Length: 226
Image (cartoon, rainbow, N blue to C red):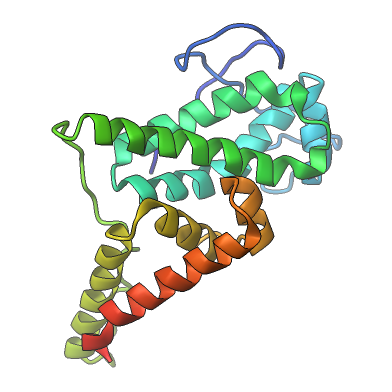
């Protein structure tokens, strides 16, 4: 599991700087009086959580952190192949979100907005790598842990499936950054072409082209597995 984001932070819009600034993730009381982390707690809709977080509600912001920590961590991990750097991206993303939340005019736009910030933080890390290519990274296995085989499973089929997943993961990691980002957002995060265009700053036709080229490269690379 990735490193949890810590508490506390000033009100949104504070001028404090530095990625070491901690972020609020306190759990408080929901509108029903139950703790936000309780199994029976009532979770507010996301737009309401954003609006309340903009007013400085720590519990609402903590629920947003809970909602987005997993997806954004996995996004960074698939792009960076490095757990520690992905944890840093996650931390820096939530710091930026908390500090700039008051600038978001439409709470309903929060999902695309936070993906924009996480994507920018991830690309910054990739740019830093290109400037310092000799820095060691911690490559890790990105595929999910395989389901333990049952007595009815053919061992050779299980091994082949794991090898195929590993091969696909390797091919994804070799895609150019722009193709890989569009592909990951579309296939692993179910973002639409329009959303990816907004997140990456590219036009929608460009996004479609990138995904098509990524799909073609991956299909060609997986030919031996057909």
